[in-house]
Amino acid sequence: MIDLTALHRRYEELVRALDAMSDETPYEERAALRRKIVELYRELDGTATRVMGMREAVQGLGERFRRTFAPLPEQSADEVQGGDEAAMRRSDDLDVSTYLDRAWNCLATCRYEDALQEVSRALERVPGSLQAETLRGWALMRLDRLDEAREILEEVLRTNGAAALARASLGYVAFREERYSEAIDHLARAARDATDRKAVLYAHLYLGMLYTRREMFRDGRSFLTRALELGPSLVEAYWEMGRSYYLEGQFTQALETWKRGAEVNRFDPWGERCHEAVERATGGAPVLLE
Image (cartoon, rainbow, N blue to C red; front, side, top):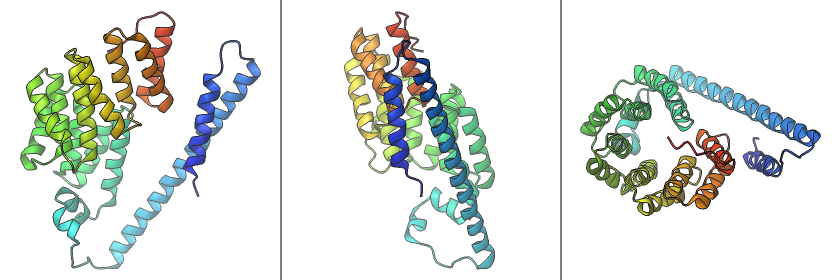
């Protein structure tokens, strides 16, 4: 059985050990820590491989079930009410959820081109999937292909006006286009949605970014604080919070915030950016904010 708690404990121990080191730390201690980091990485890589292998086995089990038995005649209540998700389940194609999971992972690690490829594979199997189209719009907007993203996200909302994640994403697009009134309208509506926690989380993140851009720093940080309450591992919110403090001239608070962001997940792209910001600031160099 995979003990995620023990793995995370080992990761935290490595973080503390690394934080305690300096240029004066003996070479033997630094080499020993590096070996432990590599060892944990390889163990996690092997764990991921085993999990993916098991997932493929379960997928094969589902395909065997489909070949063996006729389709079930009844629909469950959630299939009747589930809209886009019900259509995906009726497709009986387990590959689709795999591609969308991979797309989410790519988005979380800022690999937006890779996310587009995974979404395209999902759409080949379930054309018109609103979930897949929303992720496609999200990837495009983070690639600054704003016109394409807007077209896709607006079509999702025309099909389903309650698609909160698409609305939050469209709010981000409007923000990047400096259409601030439209952005606030979309993001405020998404932030109030009680049915989609992810949409609420990102709506608060994007509102924080918007108000920071307008130099309303305290208002921006209030939204970013709420985003971190909803998603404590959302390292991008720490980056944006530190950025807000830095732009306002509160350099000590900025460094403390970026340090916390790096501690949450140093291997996250935003965690790495937080770490680099701390190194540049403590070394007397200006922080690269864009």
